[in-house]
Image 1 (cartoon, rainbow, N blue to C red):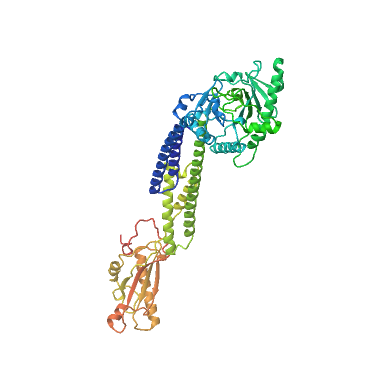
Image 2 (cartoon, rainbow, N blue to C red; image 1 turned 90 degrees about the vertical axis):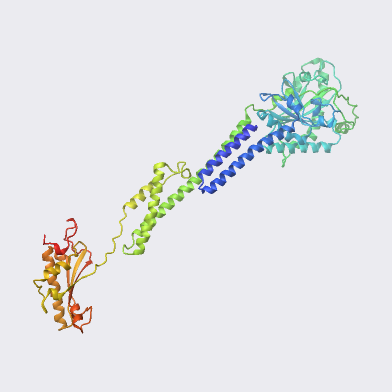
Length: 595
């Protein structure tokens, strides 16, 4: 993945993080810390992407960069490794150690070959190549070169094959599966000129059109012969030219012997099922050459031939001046995708990041909407339960007022959401509190404030000596002014009862005093009713005699105080019902009938 794509993903991740932070129900302080943390992570990812690209670029030497094709290159790119791989690139065996560690490239008309100095560096070179040429992700493959004449120990060879399978599994864990193919070069005796494709080429580029390749493709049991753009079976290849039929039969026998060695020592490593299982090779290929670079006396090949035939093989011809034929005819077998896989991979990662952020945001929004509905619903139920209690209960009235205040807060909040839109934490099409807003306002509209508990007014106290003669219940003629002055504050209104109560001193019998007190109260009532035109339902007359003294009856002053008429207003449901409430302000009783 290119540096631009990695940094674009970092920026996109930061934008998604800010979006999620704005949706989550966090306080301002928590949001500030979260935003700072997201910015730090994005900045760190930005810097790490640059350092990673620089580090990967340094893993390839400048010489390799000069010879690599451009990013628009669309032919196969093959990473070659193995003991004999350097002979395809013409690396000088006498070069110093630093030069031998360089990544060198060979370009042909059919593809590009990149030499990997050691199997252990295969993941490193792959990652570095994709860092500088991310467009090549669908063009890469791995070619393992194995020449039995260059291996002295079969155990060492097995270790190399296990290392190859391990490194391929490492690459696969990095989301990159590379096709594998195995190539082997077999030494043959020089052939007549009629048998083409068996000579060791010293000139790069000419060998590809002369070499004959025997290949077993996609696990097939029969070999195919590829040469000069043709692909035929071994039998058809042998019959193509009758003049060299014997030589081609001999080459086919040698090829079969070499293939048997590959089946015994190489193929089992790619069919094992285990932790580091490698992909099955796309093809096994054998190319017969007249000379091999650096053959080893007593190699595993010589021991294997000697064990099979009891013959001592001839000394192999050594040549260090040319390059081995490149397997260009086999490149068409390598599957490749020429699309911009780096951009596609970045797009897929961005989509998954978006999906994850959307899931988090939607989950948070659904949760917050559920909590909002639950909270407002609980407030409505609490208010309804309190509203059904006894209206005379002062504690219930206080609780109902508190619940109503909460409903007003809910209504204001829901109204703001209705007018200006719900917040992001409740959005994404999940807001469902509009119906609750209507229910809240209906509940508030049905509220009726409790009736204030009316308190009885202070009684108006009249001295009976000013109103009546001794022992009489008839009003004096001069009592009118006293009544008018005393009763100027008395007002008749619906729901209030005018209670007139008469009292006497303790002189005389109790029965006579009781009757006298009642009669005097009735006289005052009659005067008030006559003067004010007040219905009789607005009055109540009581007589208590001497049972409720306010002073001692042993003195004249006390007895005078006890002889009295009390007038007071007492709240009484249904009292004075026939009195018109719409006639304007109540008129004092004393002034009704005088206008």
